[in-house]
Amino acid sequence: MDTLVELKSYIPGLQVELRYATENNFTGKVIYAFAEARLRKGTADKLAKVQQILQDRGLGLKVWDAYRPAAAQFVLWETVPDPRFVADPTTGYSNHSRGNAVDLTIIDEAGNELEMPTAFDDFSPLASRAYTGISETARRNALLLEKLMVSNGFVPNPDEWWHFDDVTEYPVYTGVGYGIEREENRMDKIFENIKTRRSIRAYSDRKIDRKDLEKIVEAGAWAPTGMNRQTFQFTVVSDRAEIAALAKAAGQAMGNPEYDFYCPDALVLVSNLPEGTNPLADTACAMQNMFLQAHAMGIGSVWINQLKDVCDDAAVRAKLDAYGVPAGHKVWATCALGYAAGEAPAAPERKAVIKFVD
Image (cartoon, rainbow, N blue to C red; front, side, top):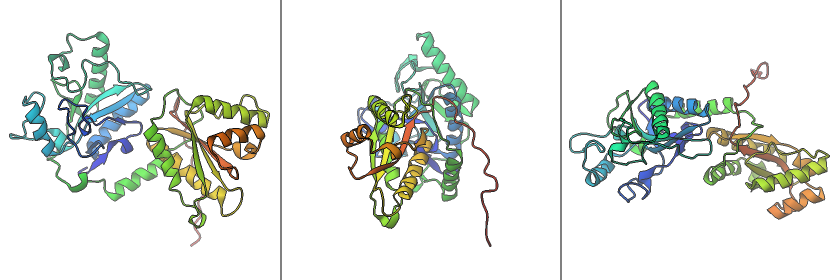
C-alpha cells in the first residue's frame, strides 16, 4: 500500500490527461517532468471500483492530476497563492504530494467529457460544491461523480468539484522513481490480466486512440520468434471503410457475403513467410502479446482465422498489396480490436488440462 502505481495501466479503460505535464493548465507552463498519473496503490484500488461502476453504465473516468512532487507545489502556489485552491507548501503539503488525491471528471463511451460546472482549475465560485448558477445537466453529472467517489472512500474538496482525497492518510511521498510497484504486485496483476482476458465479438463505435493502438502493436512486435529471425510484419488497418472493403473481398472468396470481421475499430494483419522457421508459432506469440496488452488497456480483441485461407484470392491479395503486405507473405492471423459493446463472456473453468510428471 506504500507504493505508487501508474494508473492507466493499472485501471482498465481509465483515461489520463495530465494537465501539469503540458502547457494546457492555469500556469501556462509545463510543471511536471513526467506524463504518467500515479497514486498510492490503496487509493488506486478505490478509484478502480469507481471506474468499473461507470464502465458498466457506458461511461468512464479521465484523470487530470494525481501524484504531485512536493517541489511542484511551490510553482503552483506562486501562481495562485489561495489556500482554497492550492495548498500552501510553506505550512504543509497537498494530498497530491502524498499520492492520495486525484483531480478527475467523467467521460462518455466515445471519450468525451460530460458537462460539468466548470472547466478544470476554474478558480471561481461556480466550481464549488454549492452547485449554484450552473445548468441542471452539469449539476447532475457533478453529483454523480461525487456520489460514486464518496461511496468508495473519497472525501470531496468543497471548492473544487473535480478534487477528491482518499480517506486513508499517507505521509508525503519521497520515494525514488515514484515508488514503482513491488515485483509481487506486478506479477499478480499480470496473472489477473491473463485470467480475465476474453475474446470480444461485438464492438462499440468508440475509436481507439492512435497512441493506444501503437502500444498494442508494439507489444506484438516484441514477441519471441524462431531463431530471432523476426520475419513477421504487422499491418494495421484502422479505417472502418477499409475494414469493410477487406471483409467484403474475403467474404466473396469464402462464399459468405455477410462476413464482417465482427466490425471492429481496427485490424492488425500479422503476416509472415509461408514456410520456414515457425511462422505460425511466431504469429501466435505476437497475437497473445497484443491480446493481453489490449485487455490491460480496457480494449477488446479476438483472433480472426479466415484470411490465412483466402489471402491469395485475387481480390483479397489486391487489398493486401495496397496495404503494403509483402507479396511473399501469408496472413497467418488477424487481430480485431475495439471497445466491447457489452459485457465480456465469463471464462470457463480450466479443468484437467494440467499434468505434472515428477
